Image (tube, rainbow over all chains, first blue to last red):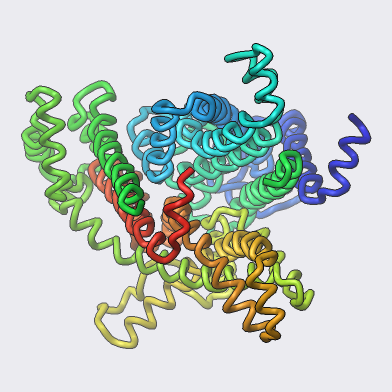
Length: 281
Length: 334
């Protein structure tokens, strides 16, 4: 496994760079909350609107919170939304894609039409409606809603690959030797789709995070919880950009930019792996 | 063949319409309590009594909703209202109609998004083509790299930075709005200049992020076109590099780029909407933001409905046009 992975990364700079960025961010999200004094993220804990200083490295916001502490607590929440939503949408997407690809017929047609329809409706539109109707938004609810609107990409990718894999020699052989139904899917087909599933996962996480910060920027995010998107929303809400309080909105923007660039690089790298494995489709 | 394709695209568009209207109908009714009273109570508790005659609004809405009718009847009535484009009144700015509000905001969004997309499509496609072309100077790669990175970042985050740098640190551009405060818009040079001046930063945040995305797509397409026989033939004929690049490679790689435009339309619109919020640009996005802030439910509903419908309709029209330009499209229906 070791030399294999080393070889995988050496020829694939985007994958290595992307995973390193995401890994470092995840590490920061795990460790930082333990290092900071969490009470500094309470409203009115410190003097408001102070630029960065030795006491407050990232300054303080208009509500009297230490920006560094807010960042440390917001990072894991934002990553959590992305990961949970990505996982849910991947599970739904892969399941539907496998079913559509394997069953064919009207089931395939139904799933395909549903995913086409869902792709035509702008997800932000539905998200806005749902979020506007929910009494109080939480991080978990947000992840579920976002996931419900981003399963289509995985469904399409996995369906197309299932169609191609199922006609391959080894699957035909397995079928002829009496392997059928679920066992055929799990033993012969699924393992060969792993690179595609991994690639779909990265895309799903990216889409989920994009939808999430979009909702948050419109003010429909979890009002009482700390996330990177809500930090930007509050900064915009209290006019931090106009007042030149760059230390307030700068850190969450840098963090989000790093996350998205990391996801793009990882996804580009995975694409290369996936296409090599299946003979450059 | 073309007819089959048209029927399929049309039925999907129709399904999108039905779904959008049904969701709009169902969501407020699924939440417990009287939707009208709930919305109005929320409104009263958050604003300081600037809504006018609450009783009259409640009555007018109860009658409009016909909440004593059976559900199927309400649903049909709702369709009737939607088809007549009667989207009700704004709660926050009563008696402004939702339709008027949207009609006032729509041109701003269309203009901003249209201009920005056209520009970035042209620049990005050309850049992507050159990235893949073998005999192109190295500096183009270095020049393109920042755009590829920017393409990963949501438009409005770029917008925040641009607003800060372009309007706060260096006071070159206005910090918000669609045109100068002290100007009465008319059809003259000053108006157009003022509007362009205010649109520069918002448009730039969309353009900077989109160029890379178009470039990446085009780069892939050119790479796959390079191996084609007609490129080899053109080279054998001794045509100039520029001619081969523009008239043989780019031209053939361009169509999939146009297809991508339809696929990413929803994404583009959602992105532009958030940019408007950052720049207080008077389009649909900023109106939506205002409506959310003032819990102006019918405006939220109306904007969401119009947005989904117009995106579905645009995609349908684009889908109809492609096969006419490129007959290959109807054939690969997998």
